[in-house]
Image 1 (cartoon, one colour):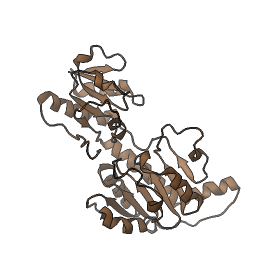
Image 2 (cartoon, rainbow, N blue to C red):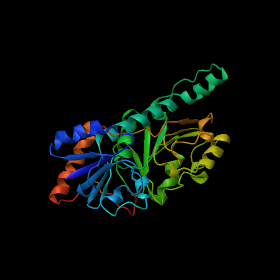
Image 3 (cartoon, rainbow, N blue to C red):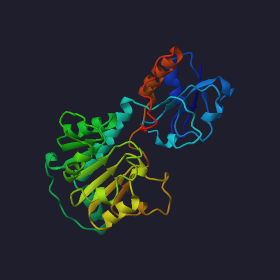
Image 4 (spheres, rainbow, N blue to C red):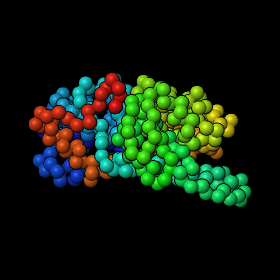
Length: 308
């Protein structure tokens, strides 16, 4: 069995070494040197060019290097084959680290200090206990549950919201449309960790942002198309929201003329919140390759109707 590897962001040498440590006989083809296309039966990819996977006549399964697959699902040439998202401890750990760092930044008023520095003002804000800061996590899947747990362990008052009811230790859980109002009203910092689906596209709009407490902060680590960008700018300019940290945007890379670059109440990172380490991520990929060889059900297969 030959495996195609494609990613413009991930290290093919490190991934090849990690996979061969678990499957010494695995034939790995690194794009663009793929040999005969009809020998490739599996693909490990991140944002492959449209048509690449469709050009492989014997392809049987697609393994994503990322937890989110919405960009791949938008490719009209994507073959109708099992598509498996990445589930890996390093993805979970790095996401929890990122969100915790952002929440601490807001909790300790660093966004205010950054603005004061730009204005050459010196004013102390005495720190409050962590429990005084209410953090709402939208999305309680693998990443969201781990992130909410890490925040609660640090002492923050954490609440979570999901489409269906979940139970997370130390987290007040809300679900569905009936629970959304109370969830938002008690979130001083809103963290979006939802997958992109038809229901979550444009979810972060003026109506939703307006249901947060006055002066709330937003941490967007879900998907760019969930945020109505004009509505965020209006909420920030009106003082309805105090600040936003955006790791994902609708168009990536963000165009140079986009107002997010220079807005004083927005902090940007380049889709860097969570990433997979080959040393650990290769284990789940190798297991799926074994299952593919043996004809057993694959792990973490995406439900294309739901988008995750």
